[in-house]
Image (cartoon, rainbow, N blue to C red):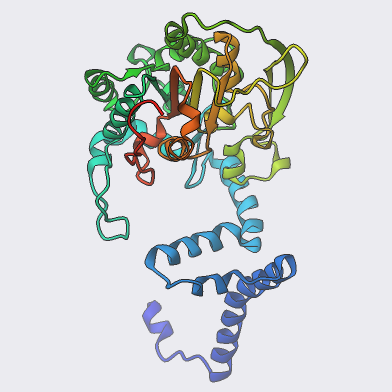
Length: 401
């Protein structure tokens, strides 16, 4: 009996067949870029490919362009949605950004990796080699935080640093079944060393992780389909932060604010990143009740440069303050602190910019610090681990302006 090799021996593909197969191959690989070209020109009148030549292409810009094409391709998106829906329904599989947990919980993959990965202090200290990111800059978040603390102290302003715990820290059992409650929150290995180094440098740090861990057992503290906390989790954190800030505000008259409760429903940033079909019912929208903090007449209460407290933050601060984030407005961390402290709170919060961008904004607006007693700097703990987040030292003019 002849084997496979014997059966194929002497087989040949005719010139016509080879030409037909090559033509089909060219057509198949040509359809996506042609389709995308027509779509972009019709939509905006521009073809994004030409943007490659506005500046000299580099490895980084080419990689960013490639990632953008993969993310925004219309045909690819139409294929990804049913494929990802199948993976999620049949195998409980996420994608490169999202981990599918138990009981309908979704987690951002990088935050899960922060729990199981190396200590972030050593990770941040390690330089990136072989890319254009090679340059002399402070990678240690402790150095940047301590420097900012010293610059504020020279102005007579007290800094309270708040590393906001991410969802896997508080709900590890929904990622790893059988996680022992006795082990406590699932922080990164460098948590204790990080807090110790800040304390030794005189920085007041309010770590709300244990407060949130103790509050588990009732309503959810984090949104199941989103990276951020629920209004209840936000309230637990606001209580703890306000307790740390209150002693610095003695003698400042208190102001009363009104509370208006509203119900909001959102799809969640993790559901959007998972790219499942919205109507498939795999990741339902979530409904929460927010507490809007208002003036007695009904207006907003955001403070200006004359407010005694400045809050620097990121999307954890904005999530219930900015309507475009789909979870309501007027009920974010700044408003909750104002209600608990009885004073106006000025807010500078940049989604994804809680590490450096907010301090750069303050440096460009010296009037924001002129009457401040306290600066609360609250940013996602993920920024301590994310290799793409830089912790620059940001100069401020010394002394009282």
